[in-house]
Image (cartoon, rainbow over all chains, first blue to last red; front, side, top):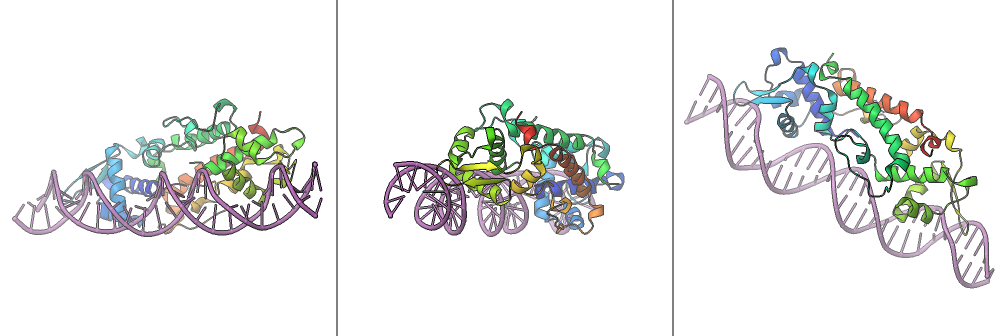
Length: 136
Length: 136
DNA sequence: TTTTTATCCTATAGACTTAATAGAGTATTC
DNA sequence: GAATACTCTATTAAGTCTATAGGATAAAAA
């Protein structure tokens, strides 16, 4: 399942990507437009600012705005920042690899092979989709 | 993330698929071979018996065995029974569809389109993989 | 018929994660 | 210096996942 955090985060990014001139948009405006709890969205935007998709301005006329062009923001990055690993098991994760406790030999593991295939199919989608592609 | 239930369930199915003559295998034997908590595995096997992958025999010489050929068990079925929806959001699920609370119009939702693509890519993998393919 | 073997079934506990909220702090603009 | 809007930490409530406990039931063997 996709977490609400990720879902809301993507919606917020898409909303920002659709703004004219990349003007700063206030949290309250995004929250209202996308039906998201403002406080929850606040923390999501904050985490995306820390990882470099967004920047923000305080005070009147402030808000959040993208610091990359929507065509340059790949969904692989977005998903990894918001959701974490794209792989469904840590032992096939490219960026968050971890060995399984119960598995003596990954190469003989029936789940391992299947999950590599699933991961690669998802990666193909995310790699070929930029934020720009979500807003048309 | 793939739940342990699903992971263990697939491993158990694969172990059964690898048996000669489809002999009944005891829970204890599967649990030991795959490093799974026996009691937990018990409940997993039980749920798969109820949905028709397996049957069981009680008493000495009893255990679980497949009631379909491994080449006829598609991974779509296995995942749906053990894990639930293949889709990452209910609003793009083929078998467990649910409308989103926050979304007035699915067709305009940026997440919706992306998640359809991800769902379809995963479906392609699962549809083209049978239990048989996991044990070679 | 009794004992042994092994599955069947319900309930529940503990740990963890997620979603949301609260409230005070900081920076910027007017 | 007042108003605006982001920043940050902590906490709570609800839900889910993993695992365990313990007795019930059925089949086979003695």
